[in-house]
Image 1: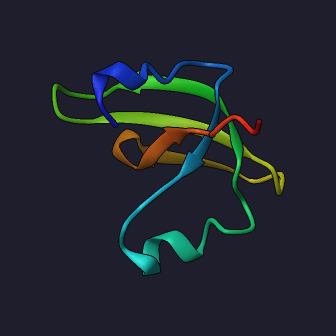
Image 2 (image 1 turned 180 degrees about the vertical axis):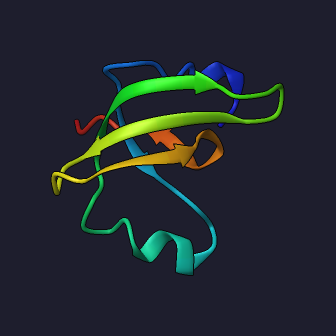
Amino acid sequence: MSKEDNIKKGDLVVFFSTYPRFQKDYVSRNPGLVINYRRLSTLHDSVTILWSDGSITDEHAAFIQHAKKEK
């Protein structure tokens, strides 16, 4: 996630990774709603997400992107 993305509480997001093993666990969860965003260090931000399947997880912010708006 780049600084331009500005993920914040209330945003609709998806988990994304180019590594298929990471991505597969989120196929049924995406999209999700950001319920908390924390800066843990200069290199690591954590995002708490309420997923569409009802689960809540803490994710490394690098794997979180805004959900694409449908036209």
